[in-house]
Length: 381
Image (tube, rainbow, N blue to C red):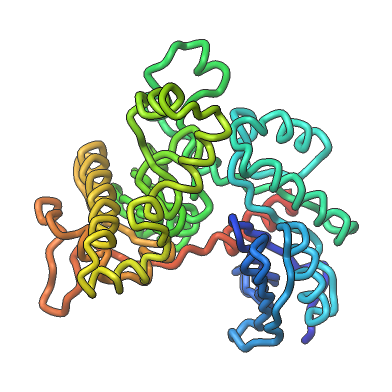
């Protein structure tokens, strides 16, 4: 494989138990993946490492013990370098949350890491892991520039009426507000639509983590996730929005502290709580087809929550020109899309004879490509 090391960009995208990386080279002004790596089962004792080329041909597929994300990054990067035969010029990291002072994509410096460290309390499940991955990448690739691409950046221009909670002003000044997430996914959709982007668009990123965004003229004006990625619609293991009285009630009756509440709403809520432990939508849909009422209820609650947000955002936008589904569930579950769209005829979402819905598009989430685009732009500044 012939590559120009100075042209290579490595994009790192970590999840709760997985890690995806892609190596990009610029071709005709576009970011072209030349190698893809993934590590699954991180922290679960049944890890697996997979590397493929640009044509999705498997180059490596082996079982690994991957106790942490940093272990996964080390193994995946080392595997990729064996096939690339060249180190990247820079590494771009998806960072879920940067707190109130880090809302634009930028190069990693000591000052940025200090500010990220100071913002840990905004996302204690995500920020420490992001810092650890950046530091590990610096060790693995000491000559590569490191860049942080924030999921909150896309929503930074939201109007104050969307950002503010109905809480005292002093808390707003301390950063207690709606940040919004999945920004890199939404950016990739806006980027690909280009001049074809309609004035009033709603994007639904539906996966293990799920959110929606109202987009006017390519700019986010509202989004379902809030201060943290726990807010909004129910997800695989996250509760989504709750009456504020619920955690207060649980603190009093179940004696839960902050750590206990965080564990409950992030790991033992959502679909897993409703279904008796299942988080995979395909499995839930299969159970529902067999008459499992618990699975049917979980699916219905999920679809109803998404539909509610679509209706609300259509009202906020003054109508709807396009509804985009993305994310694992959004892309691959036609039955879920149908459930959600059922009842949205008043927005002009009608089913055609071929089974497709008008005003609806299905697009892949290309977060790694978007990271590479940002890194390329920042390198040239």
